[in-house]
Image (cartoon, rainbow, N blue to C red):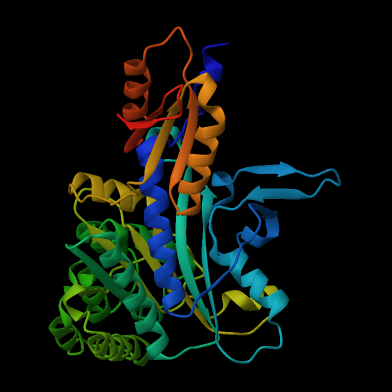
Length: 402
């Protein structure tokens, strides 16, 4: 039992020493980017009522939620996703606001993944939500903001894939397929299973043209020129409007000068059913999953009593750190950590020196040298605990750098 107490439960981990320092540096830098774009900080509770993340909202499946009860018997859940919480807050505190509002946030989410998936169950997310703006410019701003975050982190090679759920929805309308078939198609499209899509559609009375369009979905990705080819397909109005919207977003992103990072993927889907329009994910080398995901959710706030369009995105900090590490991209951390080792008789002088240095913005730790340890042992301790500068204050009050 004693050994077990030293370990963390499956799916969570300790972050300490230099790794924790690097994480904090990245988080602070990225949040500054959000503020540069006018996104104001918001904090929501770590746990909420179950209904905030219910099936009707379209977020994480109930079986993947960490659920518990309060004293009154209400079912509470650890937040698996920030967006519904932000939507609830916006509906509560900005119910009468008819102008756009911008929120930026950072915190941990909790999803009870199956153990064999090997995923962390607690992850840190940084995100932005733009509420009350249904324009192409809002879509482009969110995508450009995320590109700026990735560039600020130090990443140089990454790609943002943008799609539109209405392209898929339009094809479903034309095929007259029900919700159950839609869910099966979503799963097949997400893994780009071309043959599985063909097999599934063969069971239904769908026109040849629409079958071909749906079967091609896993292949419909590439540059902006690909969209021109897609427009030659037999699309209905809903699907065509989706392609036109993507073209308009691309033109807006070009104004930001970030078009080189953009590709399009009309087969992109999400596990969150609250997304309604444009949807995107960002990928880089060294990690198998997206490091950024987001999209438009124009009907989500209605669930909380406010009818307003919205778009948002989330950056997975843990995934980003893993990518930076595997691409050998250094994160510059502070180099002004000072350890001041002092002899017992030099306490007063040591405190005065340390306070003066702290006043200059330096970080100083005081450590009394015990008689049973050598000065070399203290210096070794300082180096392995990331103190960049080590001083020794002698009995006479003399400060010597080690």
